[in-house]
Each structure stands twice: as C-alpha cells, then as structure tokens.
Length: 447
Ligand code: UGA
Image (cartoon, rainbow, N blue to C red; front, side):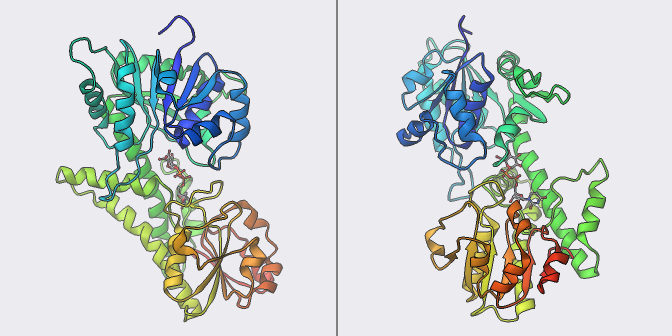
C-alpha cells in the first residue's frame, strides 16, 4: 500500500456501494472514492443526498462527506488512479432467462483494468453467480497486455446487509466473509479491522464479529446459501402455518416454540405473505439454476420458492372464502413495500396480490407510509393518504407490510370507514382483541 492513507475505490454507488463507501470513510484511516457512471447519482451523493430510502443514511452520509475522506465522481481516472483496494458494487439484476445479468460487472472490470497495479486488490461485493471471481480475474487479465501485466488479486466479500438496517448491519455484522488468496485476504481484513475489533465510536467490543476466510468460490457460495437458508426458514414457517390452520393449531404459538430451541433460533420464522425483495427470489433461483448446469436437482430450494408463491395465492383464496365474491368488492391494502423500512417494491408480495385482486374484478385502495407511486400497470389502484382513507367503504382490509405505525392505528376509525368488517392481517401484527372490540373480524396467517 502507499505510504499515505490507503485509497479505496467503490465502483457502483447503488445500495451496497453507497453504504460500503460511506461506512469505510466514516471509520477513517482511508480515502474513499465512489465511482458511478450515472452523473445524476454521483452528483446527488456528492451533495449528501441519498437517491433511495434508507433510514439514517442521509445524516450519516453528510457527516462523512464533511470529513473530506469521501468523494463521489463519474471520472474513472479520479477514482481509480493509485487505488489500493477496489470494491465492485454494481448491480446484477435478473436477466430475461432468470440468470443474473453480469453486464455491469463486465463493464466495471473493463473500466478498472487499465488502472490495476502490482498489489491492487479487487474485491467483489456484487452478488455474482458462483465462479464469477475467476471470470472477473480472466476478464481483467484479458484486458491487459500479457507482457507487463500487474500482479493483482481478486477477493470475494459477500454482503449480508438488509435494507432498512444497512448501516448497522455493516458496522455490527455477525461475520465478515472473505474469500481468495492469503495476501489479498489480509489486505481486505485490514480494512475491516475497525469493524472486526469494534474499535470506533459506538462500537460494541462485547460482541466481536467473526472473520471467516475461505476460498474464492466458497465465499461466493456462502452468499447464495445464506440467503437460501433464510428464505427456506420463512417458507418452512409458512408451510407449518398452513397446516396449523387446517388442524386448529396456532402458528403464533407453535413457531416461537420451535425457535426457542437454540439450534433453530427465533428470527425469520414469522409466517405471513412470504418473502419479497430483490435478493431472496433472485438468489434462490440462481442457485437452482447453478445446480441444473451440473444436472443437480435442488428440490428443497425449488420448494422454497413454490411455497413462497403459494402464500400469495392463499391470501386470495382466503378472501374468496370470507367474501365469497371478489368481483366488485373494495379491498384496502395496507403496506406496499416488500418489508417495512424501505420504499423498495421489487417482488413485493403486496403488488403481486393487488394484481390478482384486480384480475378478479375487485377494486383496490392502498396506503403505504413511504411508497407514493406505483408501477404503471397498477394505475387502477387508488393511493390513499392514510389508513382511514384507504379503508373508506372497504369490504375488507388486508395488512400486507408490517409497518410499525399500523399497530398504532385506531381500529374504531377503520371500522367507521369500512363498509364490511373483515381484516386479514397478512403479517400477524395487529392485536386481534383490540380490533374485535371495534366490531371487526380479524383473521391472520396460521391461526
Ligand atoms: C436479505 C438478507 O436478509 C440479507 O442478509 C442479505 O444481505 C440481503 O437479502 C441481500 O442479499 O442483499 P433483505 O432482502 O433486505 O435482506 O430483507 P430481509 O429483512 O431479509 O426480508 C426479506 C423478506 O422476508 C421480506 O419480504 C420480509 O417481510 C420477509 N420475512 C422476513 C418474512 O416473511 N418472515 C420473516 O420471519 C422474516
């Protein structure tokens, strides 16, 4: 590394890139450059504006920019010249065939190649299919003249942060996973030292994250397998919840009792409308696809996806059972984002369910504390300014996303606004007694 502070470049300032660059710069001891091809995005971030919704990030970004250690640019020359460590944080959206589209990774690698020097470490944080580290290495090598090709390293550093709690997830992880060759790993581990030792203001030295070093391919596999396990855990909870409904057991009692076993653990056992977002669906499908390339059938992973989709269909059946006819009914949907704390609508269960309701001839009104626009194909949905407005004249209310504020809603105000009395709590977060006292009939998932 150079004698001065190490220079970190982060290519791609979307969700992961913005968090990564801001957190490393905030921790100090490094100079960080965020590089994006989109001048609008780079310009916004440079002014301390966050182009997506993430609680706490705007303040954190502004504070960090003020230290002078963090700069955003569209100039590869500025960001990449003399960079010691380069993080690839570009997007890998699902392509038309279901496989991740790696064109952004490819163009990032081509941009980076001319700036590589002996000892540069290229760290992949984008979620790329297993084996992509080798592919990036080859891409970089092939972009350079064979004669005096610098000795650079490729390291995989999968990202486990969740939307809505990304800064905390970055600063207080359970583990940091680094895959690659020994010397490259050491250099990246050094950058993570403040986090690994929790040696920063507000650090929690009583809970030190684990540093896990692996081979390149194992680190890539870990990312997919970790998400697949969490998705499977939720699908398991949902499948058990379905059985509970049939036999008359209560999933709200059963699942926590399973989770109390330390071998299982309580988190990610909440039944409901299932998982959404940009990660679980994409990653589980990619893992299934990887298996198929080897003729390997991942039955458990395929079932994980099927169970998740079945939850969305089950809500419609439940509404049909309760309301008999959906055509001409007014349904109020509370919550649109795929989970609370984000404005992200990617693969949001609420949207899928709304599409099914519209197809069945129901009218839909919706309210979300943060989401204020819907995709064009949902223009028939009436977006309300609050819960009562959404519930106006409704035959049924469906709670689709468990925004905390929904627990504080006054049930009698909802009851007064509604025409019918059915409340389907798709996330099991409402107090059924309080809502029943207002004359409403609450049904949930798994009971
Ligand atoms: C997920 C992982 O949790 C992160 O560790 C990972 O880094 C990230 O994907 C990624 O690959 O980038 P995220 O998609 O932001 O993070 O959201 P989660 O908080 O994991 O929630 C996913 C979905 O599961 C949400 O729709 C949520 O409502 C649902 N969920 C979660 C349940 O239905 N039940 C539960 O018990 C927990």
